[in-house]
Image (cartoon, rainbow, N blue to C red; front, side, top):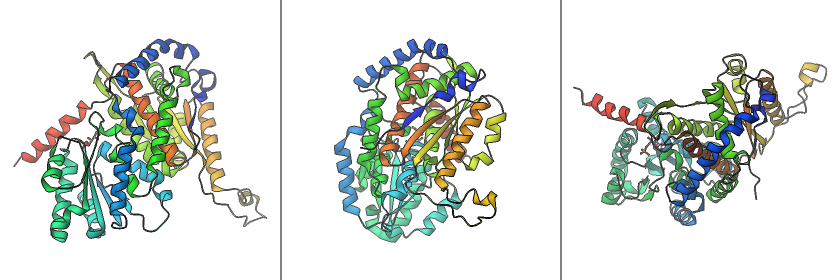
Length: 441
Ligand code: PA5
């Protein structure tokens, strides 16, 4: 069994981070009654079936259906293109970035693409670079009506039909609502293979439905281990004792730093390129779930904490100056990896030059870890709050564990703040106005 992620919150304590941003034991203590109510609220909504994302790690039948499809199409495709946006793209993209390259070392593993945007130059270039007969297009949309996804689908379908005639449907697989929406209608009318996104699970909580699991399984990622890690996170973050519960403590720390200390921004900063997709995915999760004008009572609150991303050590030479000496309005959430799976030894080429010889014999992994520890300590000394999620390694178990912990943290934050974390009313107006804009002569 892989070991889990551990969290280090000690650099958030006032004794370590200083007065400006540090939290005191009294700050946490005062929040506990409300946090306990939030825990009870989550428990009762879960029992009532109103938070179905909690149950996603435990569905062997869905994994079985996905496995059967993967076996059916094995060897047929060199490329898989996910046509989806927002929660219908960020989850599978995060999985592929983190795990895709180590999943299947054989050259036959299909490459995954996430065009995501409707940028004409990029989309045309991507389609032009693919051998259409050997490309599977996984169209993902929960609502079935998202403009970016629909227009990409229309372009792709025309090209597939042109090339493959009636066989076009063999290069399409849909992931959508089990009963509603345009894509479900098309699947039925044209007999196109379709997987279900569970009702009650919105885009940004859907990575453990076929939205994330199907593209992952198609590229050889171990989806069972992903779900086992997520299930472990569910166990770890069901603990009623708020400060011993990693998801609750993570959420509570961010909320209190924002509301008591003015930390309006949380920067997720992995020291590992493979984890940068997780920071992208977290940005949507935290922003879209909690950036809200109204609370559940209908009162205007304009709550939100801006999630940003940075990459260690790259952004030490770009953003860290701001984090160290700019306004006291940020909390940094480091993602550190203990074992990168591979390491590269730095050769000793200049024994007579001490400035170069110093590096010889060490490894890239050691340098990266030293840079993370040094930045963490420098931020602490400058009174800048930071915390760390430590991955023992980057594998399906730890990635599933991390994503589930973040999802639980987000619904907990919604409940604590009295915000509906599952809706996104602010996104709708833009969709309506896009159509109006296109109707203009
Ligand atoms: O989290 C969400 O609900 C959104 O970000 C959606 O995922 C995004 O708008 C795409 O929606 P759909 O899956 O319906 O195409």
